[in-house]
Length: 137
Picture 1: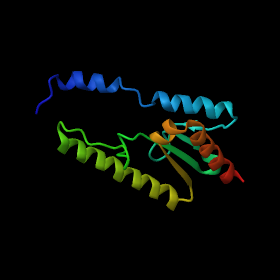
Picture 2 (picture 1 turned 30 degrees about the horizontal axis):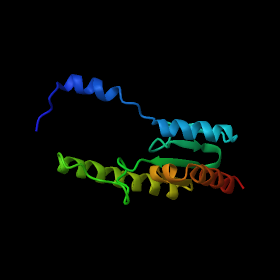
Picture 3 (picture 1 turned 60 degrees about the horizontal axis):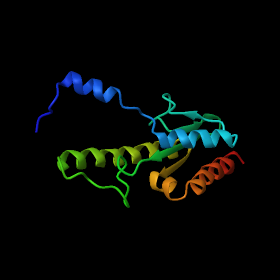
Picture 4 (picture 1 turned 30 degrees about the vertical axis):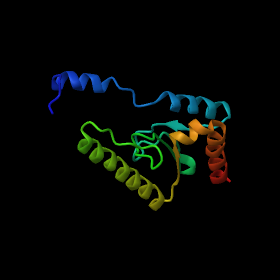
């Protein structure tokens, strides 16, 4: 099935999509209020972690249930399912590569599912804070 709009128009549409979600903005503000200092989406780090503290070799990823194919909530769309299955499975493989990279290089990595934040937001925020405090010592 071909695209309904030109390649240039599709490119403009996709470039307008924000790389940071509202949920990440909320998490960021709450972590900052709790005096956690970090960098967001650090381009110099592999996989562009959502939150990072280079000094302590800490990276935190917030994985969306759709884009990272959550085992509980991840669903392959019915339309163009072959494309979506390949795309989402590649995302999962990339997540594994990124995790392996950080672990093999002595970094501390935490992955939080979107549904963890939606089910019990405060507990998920506390999980991030506890992780950082534990690593910092």
